[in-house]
Image (cartoon, rainbow, N blue to C red; front, side):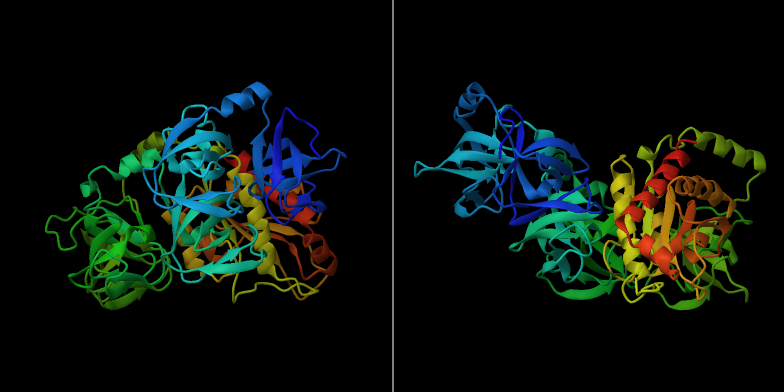
Length: 581
């Protein structure tokens, strides 16, 4: 089956692998390959390899499903057999019969064991064993390799670890919400991250290897750069603020998962780090109580930490006001998330600020009393002179994003979980279509170098405020919400782009023009839309209705992979144009 003895080769490393017409899950299957089959690699794109055999049969296969090997000349092969000494850097390093985790484990090596290196295939290294035979280990766990054995070190040196942040995280056979569930991981489980596609991570841990949503794994890189950073004094973290990334985060009495749980914290709440012990942070909550939280479930905020009862509060101008961003925002008796709720504010309401304590504004209520509201759920109103604002805007223009590669973009797959969204004429669920579209769009945008955030990567319910909160949390430059429409009149059809404010309109027009150039269904234009995810968003935000699944003929077209490929190409082109204007 080998046709090119001088070029790169790939050996299929799974039982049955689909070979597709193009580099992506949206392309149809053209053939299947079996475990052990060997092919020439003729192209590489988006984490996919184009393979061909001696009969001219070719197709695209996901990179992680094969073992790659560079075929060398006899002289190069002989040179690679020269023994090189290396040292095992971890305990219980598995030795396998071949270059890949699908091969049988034949032994374990202890840390600081010296081994002779014989050859290399990708990130895997062949070593000599005491028995006189040879075996394969992951080269990321060997120290002292020469430059010859360390080729591709830029790609392999950053061995990523991660910790599962939710209970019962599904592990799937493919990087898609439709992939077969092959097992599950629990909160706190540690995994090795081997690949990333479409917002999914290929992980290995607890005897499982498969794909999980990247939103529910907190990364812990073990690259030399990260290790050096972690060895620096931890005092720089003390006094900084962190925001909780998961629901019901346990607070423990000691910095250990084996210690007692003494409380729980809510997602989105912010706390100050009192002290650091390894991967654990001590925080104060609930009127002076102290406890420990795991660092992999939180993210540092840019807000400067200030004692909540500080007497040196920031000076506030007498005419400053703030605007509530969300309906039902809590106004509390004291500047603490555990404090009693004395009132609730609604989106758009404005309050005069009379003081500031740390991350909290003390505001005056309608009855003359005061209360505290967190600064991350309000927007300060600017009372400065026009020329002062103009000067600020001039300075900000110097850091305007020049291309999509510099941008942070939130992709919002509408609906999910118990919220199925619209239901098509033949039963198509909107929530499934939006997720499939989001996965393809993520793939296209991430390839440009953009920082792409997905509001969901699987079929789960995410409330609207949480979707908007992601824009603030990641300081996004654009928010794109994906939907498919439905109405009682089955004759209605076409796609529509919605925006809420003037700041959203340039984004809406650019993306809509991109869609116009790609889609053949009816163009319903750019329109004003009063939808929460764009109305309450602090960044340029749009909502796309990419066709009516209530129209039988349009539903059939929309359900086709080719339609989603065209739609996401249009959105991608529009975003590229928007960020280069």
